[in-house]
Length: 402
Ligand code: GLA
Image (tube, rainbow, N blue to C red; front, side):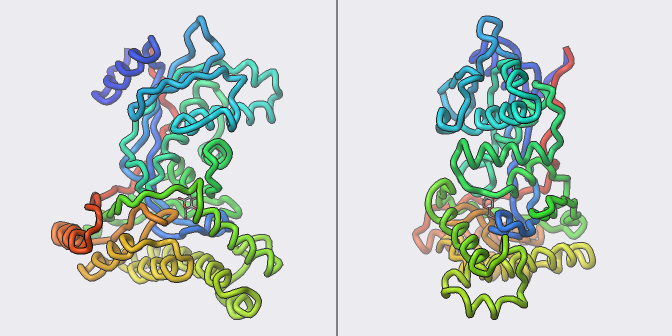
């Protein structure tokens, strides 16, 4: 029998307590930090996220013999065990945290129906699944994509579907859009599926071409410090969907399929045609696409020390044009910049969550102290500060030897 690491041993015991058998394997997928390219994914633009060293882990086994067509899920963040007949999986039947793993099971089952027919879907065996994650929830680091991708790789192997990482990212996005109800793009799941150590994923969200771009942080003694403001956000309601609608309106008014079709040279024309707010929303997306491409070029030619100004400019654009920052994020970015960070910006969908600062490693203690002091002085909640390492994406194989 395979010997398990302490974490897997704990999860196996928890699994057994909840589901009455040992798991057949463990699969994991990371959260992500987006280096640059915000709100560009659903506009068919460019993004440059990286997978982080915080992961969701899924333990999975076949369903109990007396209930072979049941999907049964549990987690370390809730006492609830949710069970549903596989045939009853549907977006409307799912709620709360279980919508992430069961939404993925539903999206995969739909895929099986579409590609192999309803008989094949009916033949899918039931399963029990237990989730553990150390990706902080609500910090804007894609804790939900981590769970979706971990569930997707686990079921992909258990059901022997043979889907590739990029296809599983799409399955995760379908679950997020339809089962969870957040109208998000493909970035988070792509980063979680496709990440590599010390590299970012340069994704063209129109062609879906993905390239690994080395970040070279270690060689330059640099770190990415995350400042989690602990201001919570929710992309299933409010601002996120509104921003997406503005972008779609701008593209429609300009007669293009998506804002990706437009470049900075088109901005004067946009300004004439669009109302001021819609124009600024579009200007953010169009200029952000250009910043992503410039960042990739600079990383390849000069290395990470050269990208600071682009990170800073991205933040200004999100704060002033896209208006998705909050005072806590602005403060985190300002203090990091004043403390000598190479560059800093909010990361993720906005309206709360985290900022990132690209810093020289020895700067960290002083910078952390300055951020904490500034937050206290303003009477803001104490932020969480931690360093993230660009890490490998989801594990495709997790089945243990018998
Ligand atoms: C969230 C969404 C992503 C992306 C970002 C903004 O993280 O899940 O698809 O749109 O916001 O860049």
